[in-house]
Image 1 (cartoon, rainbow, N blue to C red):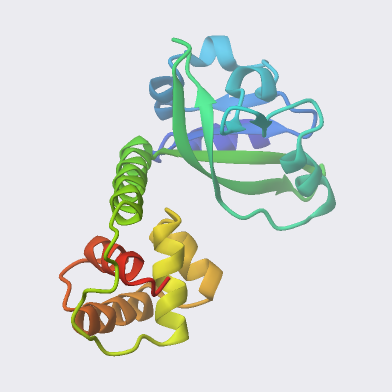
Image 2: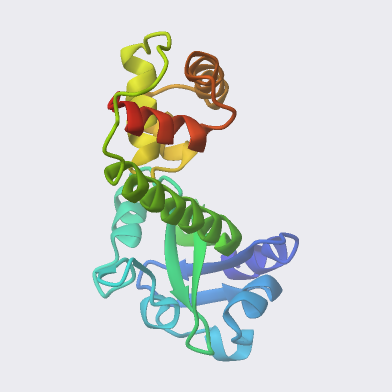
Length: 217
């Protein structure tokens, strides 16, 4: 039976993992899912995935709902990229997780399950929010500077370097910057090293602040 095979397999992962049938009903629920959500398997099994997980992005955009886009992708065979969302634990606490989806099927019975893997990313989200707050403070400081032109000359930045600093100034995390510009993390790091050399700065945050002060971005 597909559910039993999945249940045995998913107990071997540290990710919170559970399988959902194409009707949106939870069919397996591993120990890590119990720990993350706070619900025992005896409670979760048979429940509608959308109502139990209650996934959303931000405060208004629901991911988990009656017309689940993930299940529709599984039905039609479309690829599903990993993504971030907030889930709701049994305590009512909202927890940021990164979600990956695997579609498992039984060729003989044509039964399919969508396996959800969820990793707790609260530390990452807190770090991003801290960076965003610092950048907002930096912009406020920059906007209050009246003599923005009294700086020693620096080497000119390339258009790509300006784009990178503009995206970072907007609070975009590294992964999204690389995706937006279609470059690797290593290439991004090289660009930032060149930027720091040109602006005589020591970090990406300091470089963003300098670029804002100088009116480069």
